[in-house]
Length: 200
Image 1 (cartoon, helix red, strand yellow):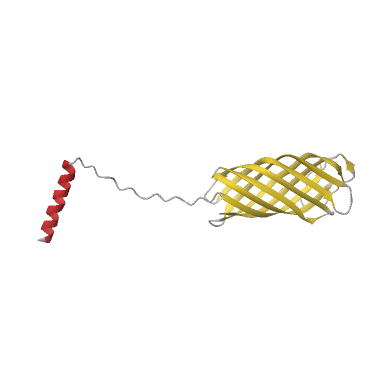
Image 2 (image 1 turned 180 degrees about the vertical axis):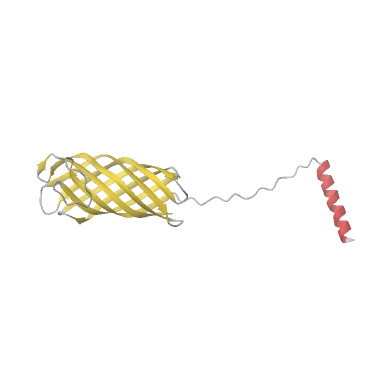
């Protein structure tokens, strides 16, 4: 008897909806939105070549006219969306080849392209400065600003952390007071950096 009563109620309800025009709100599945973490900070280790512009670039090669340093790099950035970010960097020397001390900074627009969910490539385009001094001798003094650019790639190892590797042209034909005994020399500087960023 209960089954018959339930069937009657169901039939009446359906009929009522049909006569009423069937205005029934459709059931919409909830949309799951990934949590956005636009701010990030990072830390890296950099191999840096600073040299007279007439000297060819040779990373990890001790040669006349080139000074090599090992730098610590710190960065902070903001992802506006998956394709564009802004990033600031600061590098300072921790290891020296010939008692040379350098530091540099840059502010970059960072176009980026997510090749996969984990792997991205990016470009750095911006403006920055560099200061180079000799610790034990007065044959090097550079302090100037100019255009900087770079290329890199990153890989997401977790929800919050990415590892990255990039190349940055820190200085190109930058004016100096003196470099390796050459007054008013022009100086180039390039950096290879590997590190990790944390999104929060």
